[in-house]
Image 1 (spheres, rainbow, N blue to C red):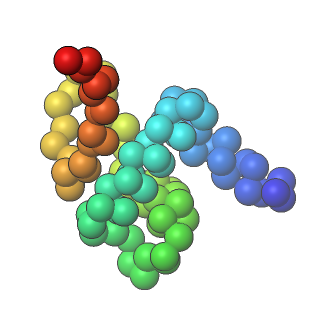
Image 2: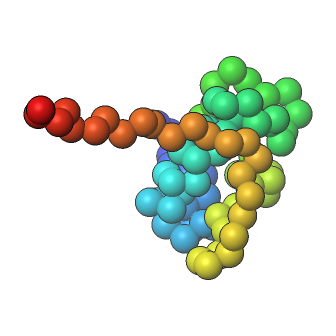
Length: 88
């Protein structure tokens, strides 16, 4: 990773409030893209991480404020929880 790339990541992390918040934001946006949400940038790539980074750098996505209710752009299916088997 080049020095310029590291500085860009640090700038983005500072913009959203830290590297962990940056990771959460990018993961959630990549999941939305994977399940059919339209890209918010022109000429999106097949690389969902790169597309989400571009959306963030262009100010198209942000983290919601704590307590703010946000409707997702797509419904992401939840994993089914496996129930323990019952002995008869």
